Amino acid sequence: MKNRKIVMYLPHRGDPDKGELISADLLPLELMQIAGPALQRGWKVELVDALIEERPLERVLAACDDAAVFCSSCILGYQVFDGVSVSNAVRERFPHLPIWWGGWFPSAVPELFLQGAAADAVCMGQGEIVFGEMLDALESRQPLDAIKGLALLRDEHVIFTPRQPVVGFESFPICPFETIDLQRYYAEQRRQCAIESSPNGRGIRHRFPDPPGKSAYPAISYHSSFGCPEPCTFCNSPGVTERRWKMLPAEALLDHVQSIMQKDPFTGLRFQDANFGVSEKRTNAFCKGLLERGVRITWHTTIEIKQINQYSDETMDLLRDSGLYIVTTGVETASWEMQQSIGKRIKPGEALKAVTRMDERGIVAGCSYIIGFPGESEDSMRQTLAEARAIKSAFKHASVDVFPYRPIPGAALWQDALDKGYQPPTTAADWGRMFEYKVDSWKGAIPAGVHHDWSVFNFLAPWADGHVKCNPVVKRLLQGSARWRMRTGNFQLPLEFKVYHRARQLLDRLWSAPTAAG
Image (cartoon, rainbow, N blue to C red; front, side, top):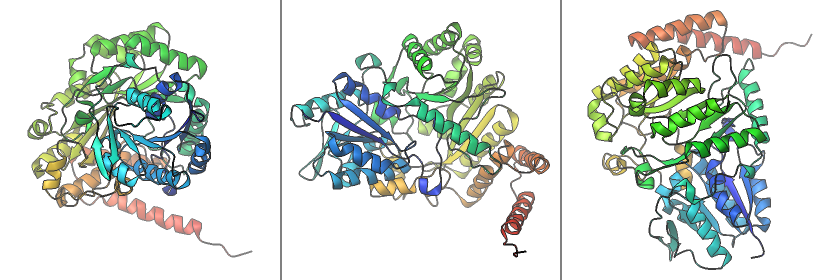
């Protein structure tokens, strides 16, 4: 084959037209991961990441001029809109260039991409083996129909080939970090930190904070496992991964992390695993390895509430001593009835116990909750808001988010949501335009009174955590007020904040008013 070049594009995670900045330690891991089998076969890979490109569409179109295939991947959110737009632009410029898609959202609704995003094929689920076989077929000019794990469009109908079995990390090359220039990401991280720390700087979405007295940047992200054994009915992971969990062993993980650090030194490591902590033995070995090898970093990961409670004190101490700073964990609901309904089954008191174990060791528990599940009662939602307030008020090292339930295609609750009146978008582009977790777009799912308290909770949270920039004296007063409201649940008439914002608006108008020429 004359042209043995692959162009990979990771779409924008945030809308650049709105000035949204996404933390630059979030590397294009989903595409880097499948680049391994391509490089192993002698293909050239050009990876374009919208996060660090000034004109990503121009870069993609220029790169596709001598390419054999264009590939993209996305999760639910703005990535869908941007990815579809770029994919269609590629098809318009290069009508005969094969276009392949993968990722969590395309795996759940491949028909949207085959029929609306100029895709010729969608890889369903784990793509490392499938992608290599697709390249072999392309090179030998064979159809893709015999390859497992694909959705294809044939005679205007979507067909599915048999599922590709989930395989372990030993079955494909380790993630090739040489496909990206880490120094470009480090430079963008420095730029973002300067923006955020400036007097009127805006926040960087998904950026994890530095621990006290340390720096978490420059930083990288990493996938060390695939899948999740949890049966959560609101998530599409059980359908995509069949509840299988495959991981890179601790020693291999440590070797690779250390080799990356030697070439491009970093101080922060963020695991993008769906569920890093399934195996306590592996977690323990990873922590011990960091300490024994003298790898001094700040790291963040995902561990379930039940696993935190099952870990021994030795493992918990190793997590702290090895530099773990933030654990992201999904509590989802404070109602035992809802816990059973969604398959999570975190028993009453377990969340508080796990947060206590982390807080005692200075580890930040990043807890997320959901309200508005299909058929959820108002009392259940209020239980969740009350527990979220309690955790935020009682624990110094805790961060809490409460999100509205969003129906996700491929999840067990999807049909239940449709039956209860949810009207989903009909195109991939529309899915990308509408998704924002802090906005309740499923009208009527959350009662008005709960919606009010949830909105006030979201407003008070950054004040309570001290993340709002303003005059130090005013900040202390309003932070104290926010914490009092969180502690007592008094969300009525937060007049002190209304007065502050009216004063800020007045001052802004005065400062921006034109002055007479002297």
